[in-house]
Image 1: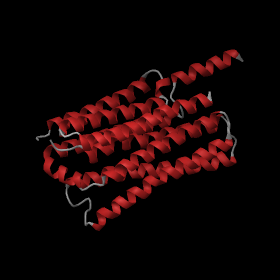
Image 2 (image 1 turned 30 degrees about the vertical axis):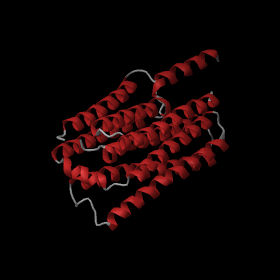
Image 3 (image 1 turned 120 degrees about the vertical axis):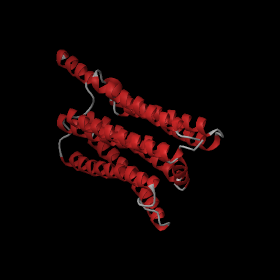
Image 4 (image 1 turned 90 degrees about the vertical axis):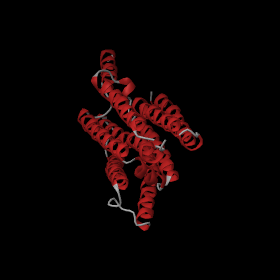
Length: 198
Length: 89
């Protein structure tokens, strides 16, 4: 028994939580976003005035709110994973609901931001800055929606299935994906909203 | 174990919230644009590392996974900040 506990401890310290396949997907996604950041940066070098003008039209308050929303939702996801690890179904379900409820604020805010841009007659065809703005935030928003769907599936599993080792790998994988959505926004917010022209 | 992990995640979350507000304040209040933007991007990099190490638990992981994540943070920070400083003022 002691040997088995030691083995589990060593394994947990050597590997990341969740399914290794999900981590391959996460790293590939992060690499793709690094490329998007590079393309935006090159675009900004080529047209600093245009990008500064576009940046000034963005709603910084909503960008800040979205950062706080995703950070808090990520924290709730950590709590859900911790509860699943001790097979505490009630806390797992409760924190998954909290993750989803807080996280949904991001969708409300993002849709309000897109609607305001549409009302002002701004689209991704307006200029290069808005093309990058809509493509980068749009791809991120798509990742966010996939995360919401995965959390909703996890909620159903947590309510109806055994909280066993298999479920723990599942919820850890969903949790890591959700944290990736969070960290990508952490870089996107200053990149798009806060880089002031010198 | 679980209680410890819950508590261990709350400290980084508070630090992340505080760092977010601090970077927003720096972006608005610091007069010199290049200094303000550099501070903001470095804080963002610090925040990503907190998420990776504490929420994604990479601080527990050894080997290539952890280094890949650390390399991503360094590369993205360098490319954004490098590009920013190369942009004509």
